[in-house]
Amino acid sequence: MANDPLTDEDLGAVVTEDSLLNTSHPLEDHEAPGLVGLQSWLDSEPIALADLRGKVVLLDFWTYSCINCIRTLPSIIEWQSKYGELGLQVIGIHTPEFDFEKDADNVKLAMARFGVDYPVAQDNDYKTWKAFGVQAWPAKYLIDADGIIRYAEAGEGGYVAIEQSMRYWLTQAGYDLSSVPFEPDNFRLDPETDRAANVSDREGTKTREIYAGYQKNLPFHRFPPPRPWILYNDYYENLDSDVPFDDPGEHENQHLYMQGLWHTGSESLTHARTTTDFEDYVAIKYNAKTVNAVLGHDGVIEYRVWVTLDGMPIGPPQADADIRFDDAGNSYVLVDEARMYRLIRTVDYEQHKLKLSSNSDQFELFTLTFGAYENLDDN
Image (cartoon, rainbow, N blue to C red; front, side, top):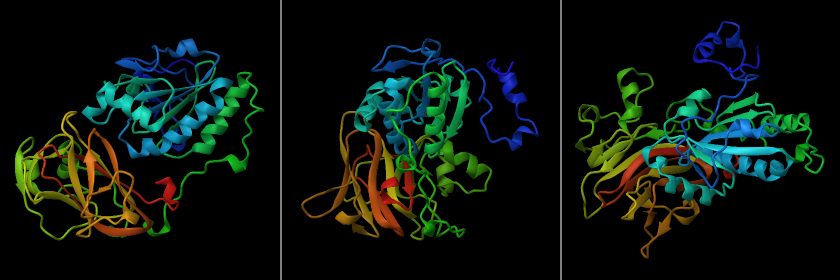
């Protein structure tokens, strides 16, 4: 029957020649799997999907340092606010990309920072993620009042289609939505990429997310293309080690460069010594409007990371929310928790050289992410 839940064997069988032409999710129109293998529920008692029959459920698979998830959260929070008393229940499934995101206290801090006020479950072992066949963050699944998955969306965007589907299934379940109009003036359209970023030239195109840890770099080092984010041979020959690096001076878009002693970790690069004059650093040449960095913190000692653009301190017009300035006008980030920090924000799509340096041996870099949407607020 079409509404029977799929087994692992069924999931393999649905990928047929005909299904390759169908862009819907293989679980659509099937009964939703259970919420399984969860570590804890934050600000909520445990919830089973079976107990929510009669309601429409939106599952949001997210992780708190992911810029794509962060950009999607305002819409999800708004949907819970608009439809929460009209039959909708949003549940966040927090599935961590990095180990520090497994910490419940870290997730609670993020929920407070972003205004997440619906139940969130920790899926640290990816059990629910795998049950739903999730491939990347964020991912959203809409489940009707009978427990059937009716819509699935991966990545950012799709906001109008999701809300239209949400409203349809709420109405089918008998809820009156006349108090919440949904007209074109209310639509949140998907953001458009700045035209200047839509080029095929590798040096001119938007910089992809840059990963500092070897877990993501190794596959591309072994089996390019594309080339990995880090190009140093010593990096791959000395995993989980303290390695001295020299900045070659000439930088290519899409790659990370290091100077000084760095620990090559699975998820991150960590400054491997204390210094006195910011002589060790990581650097990139990038194309974007906005730049963010996911930085680590041990939960005890805060540290500063000095941020320069084209060899100079960031000017206030270019500084994003997490940049601070000392009395001499130097720009820095105060790292006091493990999370994503917003660094650069320019009106135009531009190319720059960015350098991050710290005297602390606690300085830990996980990723750098970039925004190039036409509307700056969408980044």
